[in-house]
Image 1: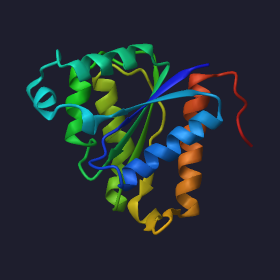
Image 2: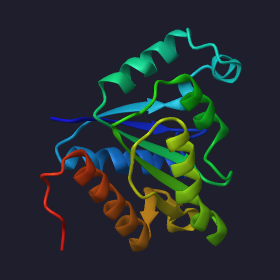
Image 3: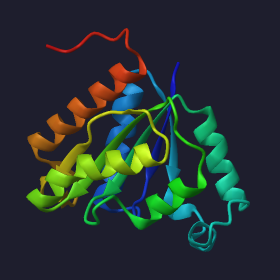
Length: 179
């Protein structure tokens, strides 16, 4: 069973990003992957922003990364190349190298959608990633908070499923391609 870590740069537990993190983890588990979550909001900002890689939570994050077969990053793309928190974390982690990496980005404009794949791919390859699958960009208006949880626009469901299918095939090339 392959292990995938989901790295979420959500600012709080009731956000759209956390809903994406939950849905991503559920979808990967349904495909038979072991999923470990890495919430960046639990990392000490002082260690991240000053580059103190000896902090216990960052040592734990490195162990998770080293044990992972694949990585999914869940990040807002309101800033061109993801959240500052994600960029600071990547600076302190070992290279993803040959592990497949998939980014799930959330934004609000067509311009953010157009630049998300290029910007995140560039960020990841600059950090040594060799196997970056196309980014899944979802518009934030596609996820609506309700009293019962979240209402998903069908386009969001499709886009996330398609991106995770490509990531799954990259992680396990023996998987069939969906028609």
